[in-house]
Image (tube, rainbow, N blue to C red; front, side, top):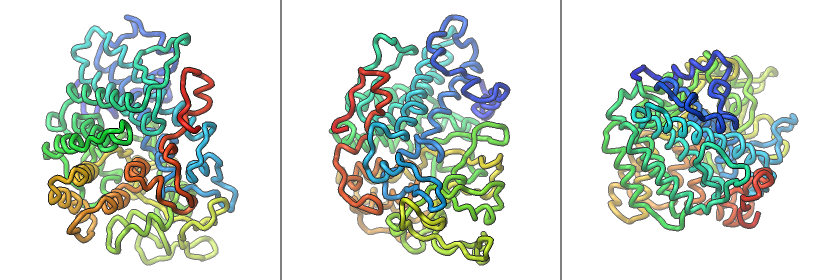
Length: 510
């Protein structure tokens, strides 16, 4: 079906019944309703269900969901303190931030039971119906899309919990519930699934980039594979940096991507389908009831309502401290995406004041349990400028992968392989030049890690990076004052899941 921006159009077709979930009816009953009458007869029918699987994966990038939050909690760049006013305190959040997570943590239970595995189950059901359709031959690219989306679900499951069940059938036998699969085997499964999916997906060079956006391409899958291979030693015990280089080259050599002029340009509501840098993203359109981006609601200070003329007051939740701020060099344009110190209106001159005339001055966090309203610096990654609002929901699309990550992944892999070090240095310097940072004359692993931290703050990369570099375990920072045991590199399987499925085996030491 050659319809412009088909994913958004299919989203809109679901509005009449209230939500994607109800439109697609991707509940447990679906797994038992597959029959010749429910197999897809047209590509339009098939696409409607594929969108439903995309919607599950999008929760891993959205600010309000535990799919994204548990990938940021526990790092040195993301905190959510309780406020002196009584808001935001959450014991589950505190456990994560102090590296003391237990199997009863509600955040990890929500991520597993609401986002990751329901998304995998939806993909299984959709794939079964696609493969049984009388028009299966014409649906191969769609089957590949769903295969890749399911692989992404398992990637997150493996990254967060390590040893998880691998199940690909459309329906679960209650008398033979899935068993836990070792992490190394899950890693191989995810690699194989992504590799198979890439064979039938179109290249970005074969589609109209604007019209096809935001669907997965070969290059989106190659980027996911590069990330997998970059962390292969963590996941499987065997490093595979040579494959990182291969996957990154698969993207670079298309000449279809380049860095935007500024990092912030990737997150503007007005520069999504046309972005030169975005590789993987998720569409939203709250003005038509199709989801929405609530990053500003969760991340900004309430006085930003005045600064940006917002139709709501932000909730003063997520923030960061000096550990992350001090990584940035003077003149780094990425500092423009951060709010710290004295605050002004957009003119940069007029002080941003409360009702008593006191200027807002954002400080580092001093008290995690009862922080004042001005404690904690803020990340303004998804700009509110030019946004169409529906309540607190903006129309900035969620970004999953950017071209700068491809450049930095290849650079790190080359450095670890001790190959083409001049090429690795130039790749990093490309990213630094874009943000007005001075070029480096040499590289170290610490420099690479810190450049990634500056570039991808709050993009759900930091926890994975810190585990790979070892800083997750060896470093200390605000609210984490001791070294972390190595076994805490994966979360415990939620207690409720083991209660529901005794075949699951809890991760070591939990």
